[in-house]
Length: 454
Ligand SMILES: *Cc1c(COP(=O)(O)O)cnc(C)c1O
Image (tube, rainbow, N blue to C red; front, side):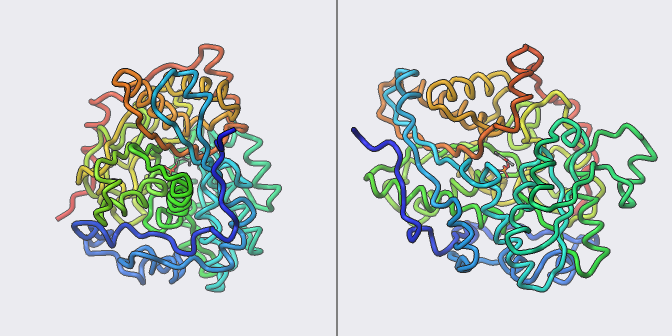
C-alpha cells in the first residue's frame, strides 16, 4: 500500500519562520498613525511587545523560532500532509490532491501556530494579561489555550452573534481559563457607545477589535493579540507551508497549485508564502506555480474591495493599513455561515495579490458546503466552513484537470475541523442557507467612508 499520510518527525519541525518581505519587489507600504505619518514603534508598543513589533517590521528572510515555542508546537506538530485519494476517486480526476491538515491542534485549527509565539513573547516581556477579540471563536480559543501554556490570563471580546450561537467555543475558552464577554459589552467606551445607539447590536469583528484594543491601550500590564492580518501573524503561520515543503520533498512531488481560504489572510500566507519563496529564488519547480486565495462572495474583500489605506477596526483605533478593504464600516450579512467576515485583508496578502503573484477567487456559500460535505464523505474529516472555501476551489481545479487530463498536483490548506460548526451544517442541510453576493452598490457606499490619505 502506498503512503497517503506524509509525516515528519518532531525534530523536523522547522527552526525558522519565513518572512516574505525579504523577497517582495517593493517594500510594504508602512502602517500610518492618526497624523497620516508612518506609525512609530512607540505608538504600537502600547499594545504589542518589542519582539512582536520587531517581527512586524522586519525585512530579514529567516526568523528563528524560540525553543520554548517549538516545545509547545510539539503537542500537535508536525501536522500531516495527506493525499486525498478517495476524493480523487470520487471526482474521477487525473489530478493528485493533497491537504495539509491543521485541525490536529488543540483548538482545532491553524490559529495556535501564532497564538503560542504571541503568548510567549508577551510573557517574556513581563506582560500580565492579554486581550483579544474573536468572531467564530477559533482565535479566542487558540489564544486561551496558548495563554494557559504560559500562565497568562486572557480576556476575550466575542462578537455577540457568535457568543449566542456558539456556546461550545465559549466553553472551550473558559475550560482553558479565559474570561469571555459578548461584544459590544459594557466594559469599554466603544462597547457602551455602540449599545447606546442600538441595544440589539449583534456585534462585528471590527467592533470587538476596538474593544480589545481600547482595554489593552488603557492598561500598562495588558497587551492585545490579533489572530490574523498583521505581518507577524503571517510569519508565524509559515510553519504550515515550510512543513508541507519538507513533506513534498520526502515524496519527490511539488504542487502546481496552492490553495487556501482567505479571511484575514494568515493561513493563506502561511501555506503559500514558503512556495512563493521558491519562485522568488528562481526554483524551476515553482516557475508555473499558481496560488489561489479563496474568499466568500458575501465578503469579497480581494475580488471587489479597493486597494487603499483603511482602519483595521470599526471605530478607527488601529493604524491605517494599505490593503484590500470593503471599508471599515462594512457590516457582514448575518446569513453568512463561514468565519471569513473581516472587512480587510492582510497587507502582505493584499500586496502579492496586487502584484499578480496570487489569484483571488470568490466562491458562493452553498457551493462551499457542497464541497465540504463531499470531502467529509470521501475523506472522513468534517471541515470548518472556512476551510470549505479552499476545498471548493481545489475540487474545481481537480475537475478542470479531469477535462484536460493533466496530472496536476493540488495542495490546499485544511485549516480546521468543523466540530463546533455543526449548526452551520444543520442550516445547510435544512435548506436555510442562501447564496448572497455582497451588492456592488453597498461596497461602493462603504468605500466612500475610506479615510483620506495624502
Ligand atoms: C480563522 C480561520 C480562517 C480564516 O482566517 P485567516 O487568517 O484568513 O487564515 C480559516 N480557517 C479556519 C479554520 C479559521 O479558524
